[in-house]
Image (cartoon, rainbow, N blue to C red; front, top):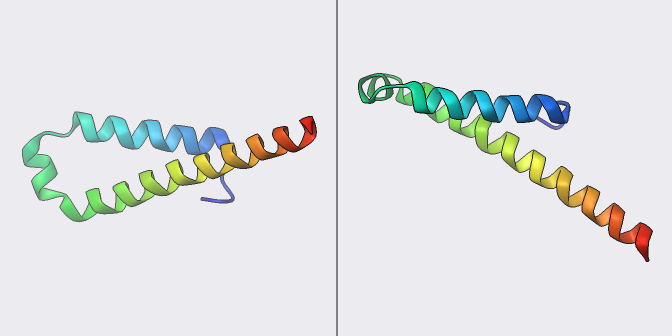
Length: 65
């Protein structure tokens, strides 16, 4: 995920969140393994975006001082 552009990470998060909403309970039960992999990708993408925002914030704070 570190090599993905920010816009790609945002789109990954949107896509994985939407598929979770669209799936029915029956589909979710039959695809638990796939869902776990998607949840991992979703969490990885969210974490990477958070780390980037934190880095940008620290750069901004250091430039002010």
